[in-house]
Length: 269
Image (cartoon, rainbow, N blue to C red):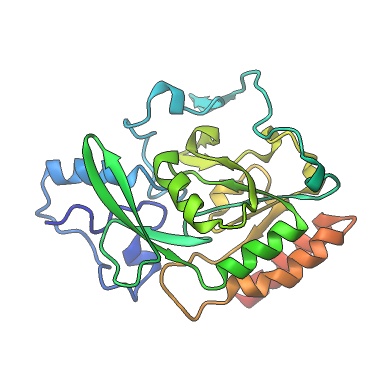
């Protein structure tokens, strides 16, 4: 069995992307060795959904662990420096937008994809695996405009050895001032959460764009939810969100706009 066929753990392919050819439940005949390898490969991608996340992957070394951890249901906060550096002159006065990577801007898989935009080699325990990356439609236009309007931060729960080279190829305009990876997340109730309070930015001027509600669970009022994307090339979600971000860039009160947007989305569901 090809153990790389369905290892991405953010969202189960068989539950969230029925059009994918590799969707389906894993065979009951899979042995322990295959399941172990599958979990190892999957740990390189973000793990948001509570049903898809187990304990922090053993592949993480001590330097990869979040600085805020959960023990026996209690969050322990350790004194720490802000995750973001001081603003540069270009971003002075701009709002900060935190942008997710997987299933928000791109979709990645260890299974070969004929129309992949990028192929990223990732070394796992001495073996190089190819990661096939698809860009979401209109991601180029979206990133360029966001870079004109905001201080943009890439924040992903994936490991840097995968996400950093993806960002190198994706962000040709240096839109992302800072990149944050799994070690900057908080592991809380089985999910990697992006704690906006640790960024060092005014929360009343901070927005997060993400496909996973668990990832912004500490600050849902700052969120712009986005539909998870896999391979639908007719998708226009990023293009459709640009008018909202244009408004947010000039708004005195971001929370009223964000709440109205979320309520509008809820009515559509």
